[in-house]
Length: 257
Image 1 (cartoon, rainbow, N blue to C red):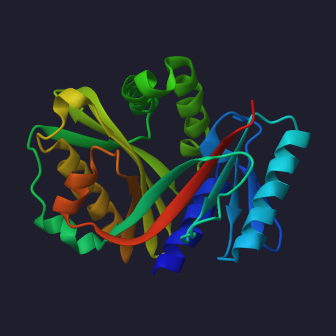
Image 2 (cartoon, rainbow, N blue to C red):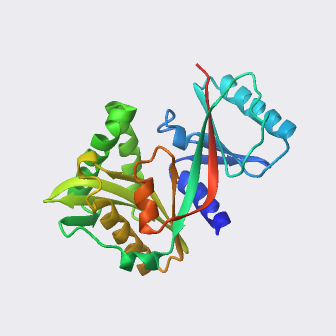
């Protein structure tokens, strides 16, 4: 199961970025949005010894510096021991949890009757989703970047053959939340889950989870997963809905400025 989730993560990244695979790593690069960490990173495929890990990180740092890049983001799905990060340049370390649920659980979740959820197909819903996304994420990542970020995502949402869709949550015809759902065979990924703060803890988030699980069930998906960290305000809601931890991901961010 976890291997399938990891594979889906890579497929998700490939929707926005070009990938360059080597024996030990896959490098992702998005020329359209080169300053977005999630689209420009190095993924380490497998667990390795400390010396090999440190050598690999040093090599990736050198590649990014030679390319005059301002950062290096490294991701991997295994734990590392003490001394692995004993490097000349110390990274910011963030750990995430993979959490999964079976789509059938959706039928047991209660929904807010004042909530309407729409899959973005028309320009009106795309526009509502864009405005909502900027409003939700602008304060934490600056509004200018938030605009460029959602515009890049909209390019993928609008592709006729795309299996990555935007869902917008409405209250009284006003967009108050949005989310992505990506279908990948028997697996589905939930990403960028946002509910405006003034509407949180009122059942809107649960309503959106219920709707996404029902969509997954219609497409014969076996498992739905998402990735969350300790700072994610929705993590407790995910647990209450029935999501369970199945694995971990670690990100290392190196500021090269």
